[in-house]
Amino acid sequence: MTTKRGDVALKLRGAIALLSLIGTGLALFGCSGESGGSQENEANKLLSAVEAVQARHGTLPLTERLSGVVKAKNQVEIYPELSAAIVEVHVENGDVVKRGQPLIRLRDNEFRERLKQARAGYQIAVAQAKQAEAQLKEVQAELKRTEALAEKELVSATELETVRTRTISAEADFELAEARVEQAQATVDEREVTLSQTVIRAPIAGTVGNRNAEVGMLVSNGTRLFTLGQLDNVRVQVVLTDRMLNYIETGQRTEIYTENAPSGSMIAALTRISPFLHPVAHSTDAEIDLANPEGSLKSGMFVAVDIYYGESEQATLVPLSALYENPATGATGIYVSQDSLDGESVGAMTDGQAASLTAPVSFKFVPVEVIAKGRMEAGVRGVEPGSWVVTIGKDLLGGETGTARVRPVNWRWVEQLQHLQRDDLLQEVLKRQQGAAGDSAIQREAE
Figure 1 (spheres, rainbow, N blue to C red):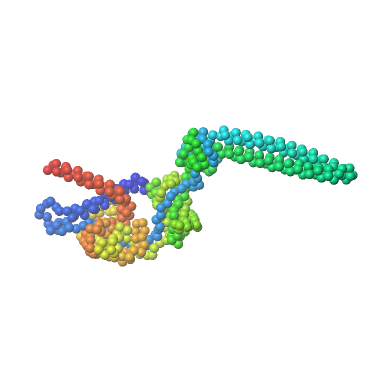
Figure 2 (figure 1 turned 135 degrees about the vertical axis):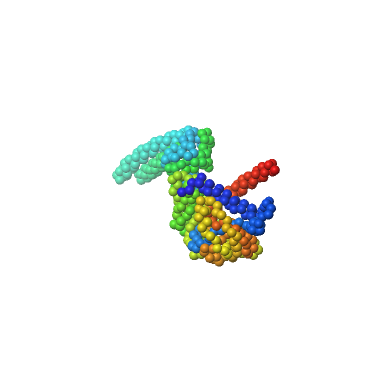
């Protein structure tokens, strides 16, 4: 497994070798200060130097390059449910907490007082209910006596009806008192829940981040206090268009590229795709669940994601750097060697060392049909496998045919160069220019 430091060194060696090639080509164009050179040397001065690799036969993995955003598993933002001042903060950024662990305590004096009032109101309601119950029992007993006397015709029908009416009223008063008790109990329960909300607890186990809480700070239900999530497992979210849904599906292999990973990339399967598309953008979200035991992926990080959804048909494979758009005709093609090259020197490129240049070789521009493109190579028709194709220095040839001295390289070397960023090359060019300027100044002083 290549380390980060090793990758950087490899890139620098590749940039230096590439610049050496360019320098060689410029040197071949330059004029010599020596007099009496041979005609062969004069002819070599007019030749360019290029790099070439042998085309090969095979299939090209079909990939879709997307941008993804990393989110922690069960990532949630913590908001208070009350408006109050913070009196205690129990956690810091990066702390790992358990579910239910206190995070913040808010000022609770007002909420304790409200709970106290609610409990007093409950006690009053209970007392009123007992009083109503006693009155109801008294009236019910009176009704029984009156009904017994009415059977013996000792009381009038009007007196009996009056007692019955009083009984119905007492029953209603008792039911109302019981309802008030339930209402008071509900108020007590609500005030107890509100008081418990002054202590904000972790809803899940995870790592704390994005702290936005200080003692004395007045917060409301719109104030985000923390972000909480489980960083040992993350979720990479990508956006798929409706066109992509024709060939991308769950379970397909994906490769996530990040400089934080030791190998530079991480592999996982496409976990899920939302079946609901946005009504305007006609796109949907897809997610990749990914183990992150070393914590190399951070929530909110942007990553490049390749989704592998199949393979192209059998074709001739060439590096992407070999494709050239002819400025005269606009046709896409490749400069192919018309002479045989000795492939023994290709092995010298395996360790980043420069291979020697060949004798002058003629090249011809061959239009091709591009069947498929990958990250590093393209499948084409029009060039036979095994042909030597120019990867660097195409602009130096020009026209339909050209002649150049060639440095044969292997595929590994080409891939290393294609991995290089433009910034890496620019820095190395500037460094070389500064060194060349210094050497020129020293030479002028010596003269």
